Image (cartoon, rainbow, N blue to C red; front, side, top):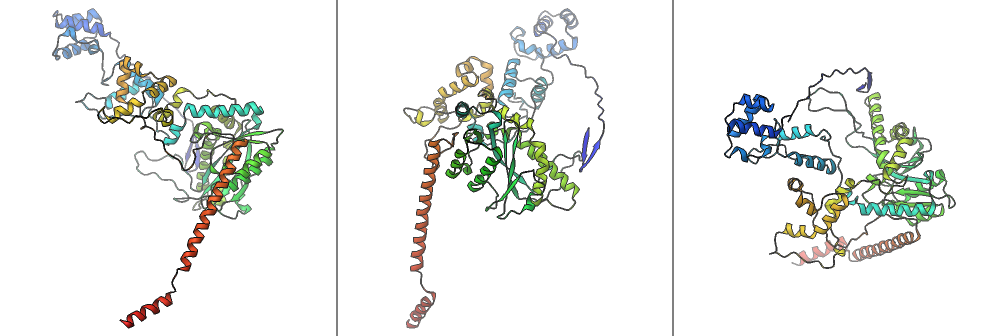
Length: 549
């Protein structure tokens, strides 16, 4: 075992001694035998010990069921069979079928946790039931979910992903790309304030701290590009300053280029991505005879006519992934960026331990990045990212049905797809019922597509309908037809001639609009300057008026 105590590594051998735990035989007695024994004791007036020996039931268990049955205000023969089933100390609220349905739904849907406070008056499931339920279903565990925006949850659906793989298949049919000619590029931020890892501390202590450089740090953008073969292009570092001396690249990965940014954020822009494209072409050496595929996101820096012309002249085919789906469809996000950030934070923590009372600045980022980069960008991690996204090897069915369930909340009919939009009548029923009735056909189609039972099956299956009543599927409000100032982006091949011409026309319209706005601004300023009154003349006029009065 390796233990890190404030930067020092302590080696030791872990010794584990576990005491064997005897498995408890819960529910070993057949409920039908318990029911027959209780009837003999209460109805036929048999002794408890005699009936217990006859049916092979422990005497204490039978006595407990007899006492429980005597408190009921109904005949013994009319009691349901579930009455004679063991409830243990876990207070099982649901039947075995309902619990299995709940466990299946939790496994597939990852439903939110319910309130654990027990309400005895409403016979609600509480803390005791929760502990017993988790013990009976060992495949479930309580985990901290990763924050996922609503846009990402709803954008990753089968239709959007299908369009991406359709475009990807079209590109493959055109050029027959091999693994060494398929690339993916993305940016990530390296902050001078790292995220501390776990440390050993006193149990029960409220505040456990770890020293960092500052409360807020400066962000350095790193542009990373990898291929499906496991190779990578030397990265590009963008520093939030206009001038970029060579000292900033001290300790950086070999071949790294650096560039300054005119903005304080240090983010990627059109001019900087054009610089990176020239760097990529010099490293990957594409040509029209040997083209390469470059998969990237929908950032505004990718939409430049000058950039697309450069890419097309050098045989770079640019394919964008759908918006808000990079967490699933981009290889770098799947298997490279997280290890890179983890190793960078680890190297930053080591730096803070070895250099007491010294903070991490922009001059140290390249050195820390140079140590973390080769550890994270291994061929295994890179190839795994392309394989898990279905990009290479090409696999349009890499995502299972349950992975699309997060988009169920927004699976609603589009207003343009409906022939007639009939507004809900105020006297027809509740607003919630009217909205739900509009989505019936869409819901059934989605449930059949994802393998969920349809509305008819839900009505037939009482246990599942009760589960839906407990934790209903969330559903968005009806879609509204709105006019967007900016057209919503989608997956497309940017280097295709129609797309490239459309982007060029959009740039011309934007330049004309900016020119007109500047002309209007200048004319307003000229008008204000003409009507501006001389303050000396205004003061003299006021003095004359006062003197006259």
